[in-house]
Structure formats: C-alpha cells, structure tokens
Amino acid sequence: MAKVSVIGAGSWGTALAMLLVKNGHDTILWSHREVQAEELRQKREHRAKLPGVKLPEELEITSDLRTALADADVAVLAVPSVAVRETAAKMKNLVKPGQLVVNVAKGIEEKTLMSLTDIIEEEIPGACACVLSGPSHAEEVSCGLPTTCVVGAKDKKTAEYLQNIFMSPAFRVYISPDILGIELGGALKNVIALAAGTADGLGYGDNTKAALITRGITEIARLGISMGAKAETFYGLSGIGDLIVTCASRHSRNRKAGFLMGQGRTMEEAMEEVSMVVEGVYSAKAGRELAQKYQVEMPIIEQVNQVLFEGKTPKDAVQELMLRDKKIENWDSTWKV
Image 1 (cartoon, rainbow, N blue to C red):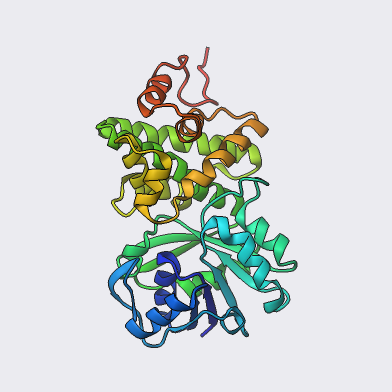
Image 2: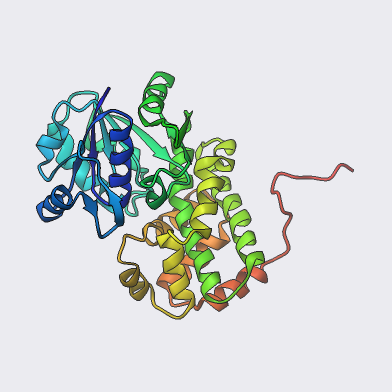
C-alpha cells in the first residue's frame, strides 16, 4: 500500500483519488478551496463535476496543502495546466527530496513552451516528474468503466512502480520512456478537438471529423519527432487514442467549446458556457509557436489559432484547409522509380 496525495479536486483528480482508494492505497484529496473540501467531506459527492458518483468513505479530503503532502510516497498533480507552475511552487518546501510527482494535466506553458513535467522539475528541484495520460474521461473512470492509460517515466523501475499503483481490473496501465511524446500528444490533441467540435457545430459530417483526426495526429507526430519524441508514441494511447476520444466524446470540454464556436459563439462565450477549463485554448498558441520554432507545418493548428485569436470565421478556416496546395499524404514516402 502506498500513501498517495492527489493535488486538485476537479473531476479528474477526484476520479483518480477514487480509483486509488479502491486500489487499497492511503489516499488524500486536496482542494484549493475549503468550501469545496467541506462540501466533498459532508456530501461525499462532487455535485458540480461528477454528480451521482459517491466518494469512498476512506478518502480523506483537505484544503491544507501541508497536510495533503505529509509523508506522501506519490503526489498526483491534477490541477489545470495553467495552474501547474503556481501549484508546484507551493509544493516545493512541503515535499521530501526526490519526491515522485505524477502530472495528469495536459498542456504546454504558453510563455515558455515548456512541458508540464519540465515545469514541475524546475519549480521542485530534485523531484522525479512523471506523467499519466491517455483516453480517460473522468466521468467514466469514476464509474469504473474500462479505461486504458500510459505512464511515462525516466526509468523503468519508477514506471513499473506507478503502473502497479494505478492498475486495476477497470484501469489498465501501460508504461513508456517517452515522456515528451506523451505530453505533446495530450496537449495538442485538445487543439485538434476544438477543430473537430467546430466542424460538428457547423453541421459537417463524419468524413470531416475523420479527416481532422487523421491529419491532426500527423501534425502532432511531425512536431513531436522534430522535438525528439518517438513516432510510435503518437499512434498509441496518449496520441491517437486520446485524440479520438477527445474529438468524439460528449464528455469532451474541448469538443463542446469548439461546437459552440461552430454555432456562432465567440471563444470567450464558449469557454463561459462550458464552465470548465478548456485546455486547447491555452495550448493552441504554444503549438503554433513550437511549429514555428521547429519549422514544422501544422495547418490545422494554424487555422485554430486564427479562429480563436484573429477573428477568422470557422467556415473560412475550413475552406483554407481544403484549398491548400496539393500534398503527398505521408511526408517520408517516395515512389520506387
């Protein structure tokens, strides 16, 4: 049995805390708001994010970060990507040397273009930052529906340790050394999901969505390989797997925000209506800047940026994608003469 601290009481953090308790671990869930922590303790239900799902009585809930992190074997960082740096900085003096921190958020820091595990290690010197990612909506994990994810870690022993902690009959976990690839796939799929949702809002069909998914993963993989990630990662759970579920699921906040924009809402109106953090909006600029930095062509990411921040209409963005210069499908393919 491990002592696990889940830092962040949103839907995903709460779902993972429930999973860890059911796996037999001594688990504590931290909320940054005492009002929320008290409601979760009293009601044993996250009414705002996971209505109808009962929290295990064994799950401890606190709003005191020192209490949450005391003697933790593993700290699961489950705050939104935009809050990772601030939260990690608060954790710095409350964790032991070499603290194992598992990032489960998905994003890239806009100002620095850093991955979230790199931010964690910068703010908590000596921490061992890992990542858990994959097609895993909290609404389904909290109900015990079969789900499969991947853990990324720098060494195999750590990866296997975390695999054992998270693994359950309903939550299968694979391991990988490609932390960068896992994080890029998780962050940029949200941008593609905005495009897929926008296409749905415009009334386009399955053909359009299939094209966005397949060409989207091609863009993400092209960038990732240029940055040093492994190609196969993008065709696994944290790449194409997560992209499919985020583009298609009714649970996807990024798809929903895109859908609303396709129906005529502004970005700000869509985010307000979703009433949850829409990570793709924050990752879009970072994705575009990474594409420019590594001189990688990413037309879908580019068009999403123009719709989000430059006033371009979704219809015009689709038309520009369709009328681009003729291309070969796979950039490394050639004919035998």
